[in-house]
Amino acid sequence: MQYQNAEDVLSEWIAGICSGAIDKVEQLYHEHAVLIPTFSPHTVSTNEGIRNYFEQLATRDNLQVRLYEKSLKKQFLGEKAWILSGIYAFEFEVDQLLLTFPSRFTFAVNLKHEKPIIHHHSSQVPRNLS
Image (cartoon, rainbow, N blue to C red; front, side):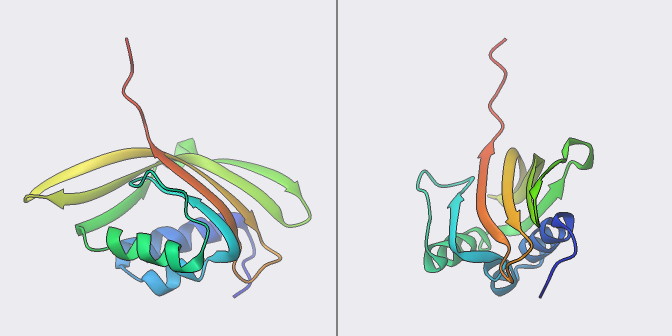
């Protein structure tokens, strides 16, 4: 699938996570993509590793991702390459308690590729020290 804009890639990623459509999520990542995931200390740089990470994440009860729309920043790099960054929150249940994990993200997306995500970094927002 060819995407018209980088926001469509992000929307597709969020929809895939929320619906548990791991195949759809994995297909967004380029063959040479790098994922620095939110809930793992390990960088992932293979499609199999990316799939395994999201399969494990999808086992969480009532998993959702919510984008904080006002936080979204878009940087055009030229041709069809973009950087998207901002804040989203993962929500899921642990021991029947709904937990929320606000997280920062950066996606490097190249719309020339059928699998447009070439880099994805996500980390939980740290607590304020003050």
